[in-house]
Image (cartoon, rainbow, N blue to C red; front, side, top):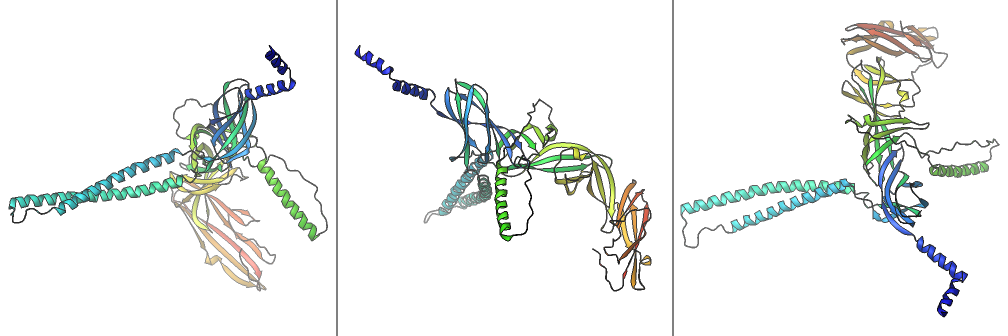
Length: 554
């Protein structure tokens, strides 16, 4: 009875009640750590950097749990990490850390190489063992080649049988040894190449991984899916194009492709890839003008201004790098379709106010080796007009040009272009997406079937003195011939000089039926040549300048 009274008295003690409640609370909300393996669901690749989305299904107990998403890239921009989940829970904190004790997962490619190394090592060991056995047998036969004992004769038949045995067996041994030597040499070469390949592939294998620790409080036990969204550096893509023209009657087909690369330390295996022309590294904050002063020059003040401006620029760059990026992508449902000819047929193009995105609807894999992987984006048939053009002063060859319209509506970026005509690779060019013209002219190569010559006409060229001046006349004849079986429209470009000094007088004497630009001195003929037709064009101009001066052409 006395003991119960003491317990009752203790329970009424306020300090005891507080300690009891705190103990109960701490036990019910005790924190626990839980390792989480997540899978990459989708990646949006920008021109510089990439946005990665990891997903993981997690079973949570009631209370506070530290979810450790492990095996992530060390190239994560920690300021870009976003975590979301569904259910009756609260995300309390998110932090990023490097795990130096756990290396990056070994890629399947390396595992395959190591399996091949084990296979050929075993083959080499077996061949080497055979070689040693045969060498021992060869030495044993040679050491026991005596046929009869002392004073014991050997019949001719017995001698022949023994000789046949030695010859046959020793020959078999030598032939087998030669084959084994060849096999061992091949195995050694293959093993050397495999070791070199594994060494190259393992350059990043011993690097650490990173982790994202998410503290979560759940009222009740539940199972839910977490989504981890973050930006990684050392990834991006570059545009590359194929321009194909079947003939001069067909439209040009533009194949829009991308060289996608990533060296984040984590392979993107069988994930949804979206390419974006956006750049998350650029700040979205509009610059503001501050008051611009003018004053008298003071060397000391100028040095202070430059020094402070350098500090401001560095601070601005740091702010730009840390500016949050607002990125939105639209998920496209992948329906069952027939097998497509290229991945470009499965690409969805969407545009926002700031960027164009290309969603590739089938999963793709990009290894983490920094090497560009070619991805087809989209194919376009472009409205095209074909024209032939030549500049005889610089080159006698005639060039076939494809004049493309409507290209500015495709959201293209500047990049290298491979050009094909009539199924043949013509060469490389460069597509300048900053071109302000509505027509894009692409050279499809030289056409040797249109022959052009430019010769100086001596009878029309002269140089003579007129008073205090010299007058020089020059004349050129341009011959063009069409050896093709169809008529062609040909543009011929020439020029005459433009004087930079008022003492030099230039006069265009003859350029019949040509378009003249008196400011640039450009002369353009546009003619039609029928099959097997030849035409002659004449260009004449004169120069007049003081005798005591020497002219030069720039």
